[in-house]
Image 1 (cartoon, one colour):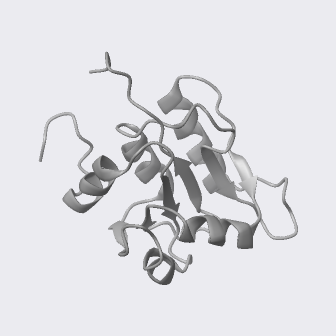
Image 2: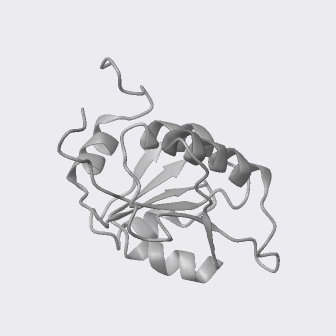
Length: 150
């Protein structure tokens, strides 16, 4: 245990978050996402796990991870097949955590399912959660930490 760090963030996840650079993508996926096979194609090359609901994992990650302010798709969600404008409860819960972490409204961009898979394959890493609800899949692009940040 470390002071000030969410206990959900295990050593493997912390190492990956620390190693990532500006513009790298992080995928946070539900239990149905093909996480292992996709993770093997990422820069890290192996799957990371945090066995907790998606919103709790996002809250923990975003407590340390800055979102990219230079792009429109720094926070993205997998859209529901055939219902691109519908936002299920799991995505609403994660949206609240994104907004809270950023201290303002930061709407997530919807990404079509297969386009999301392709984005995930290009990511730095994949964290599979214990989220069992459908469409609990998210992409977050890493931003920068300014020199005067603590």
